Length: 161
Image (cartoon, rainbow, N blue to C red; front, side, top):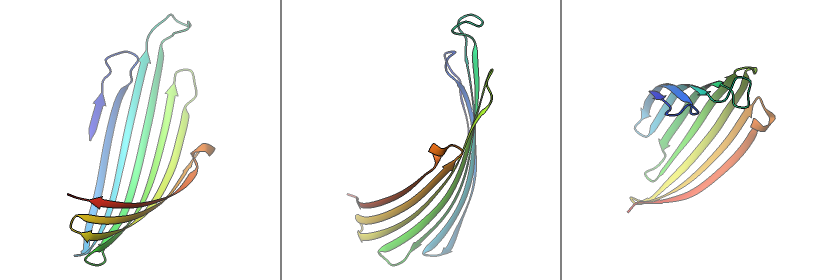
């Protein structure tokens, strides 16, 4: 996918994005499916604000921002019985942002994110399903504030009419 945003004013950034992906799905048995996906997204934003006089309060400013995101996902889904299905998803995400501003050194931000999810579904009838989902998420970055862990539990009921 390729996208481009062209600004209508001088204080809005021009953005160019390219996203590519590759996936593989293997039907291991009539009840079990394995999926592997990889995607990469690259984005460049350029903004130019032109106003004021040279070395004045509002001078010409140009900012270039580069963003890259790599995503690798592995999932395994299976139907255990006629009414119960289960799945796991392991995901790995790497993001990197760098900003080059005239007169300043390049600033870089890099993060790694590893969520692991498991789900269990129970089909009560053809229009009512109960779901239980658990996700453990771990994020690490080059800044101390970027590091975190989360445990998310979700119980839900899906009703289709």
